[in-house]
Image 1 (cartoon, rainbow, N blue to C red):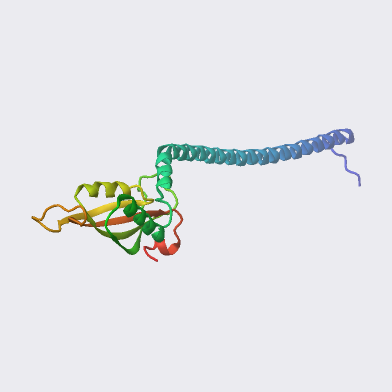
Image 2: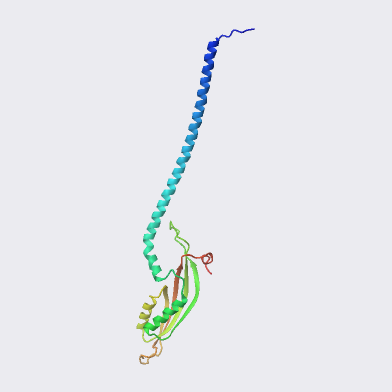
Length: 216
């Protein structure tokens, strides 16, 4: 039996075409929406990456500026330390040879030198230092020196000569003992006995783990 629809075939074709167009528009809209979402997420990710990179660049620039300021502040002291030999390893044989040269130049009586064992102290940076450097240690050795002097003035010449020896020497104590009180001054024998103690300091810029632990 054939049913008569309230809508003619021509109208059905129009509705079908409209429905197809509507479905196509909806599909296109969904694709555009999803594409927009993807592009937005990708742009947001790229923006976050760019922001992080900018922050890292600013941090690097700030660190470089601080390092430059530190270099400008300490570069002269570093060159002085290099020139003085404070950054070199202890050359004990060389030190004794230098003492012998000092004795020869000043025409001193025989000099006795005793070198003690070396101790190591890890140096700590200030907690407020924004850019602490690499680990370093302070090496120190006790030195005792005894000799005879004609008079007290020779002590000043001796100290001036010792200050020119490579390395950092810190006098800790000196005693002068008159050998023959009440006896006339002699030009050929020692009139004063000198006994001095020093600390010989050097700095190690590349300490190993053992030194950083505080000993060998």
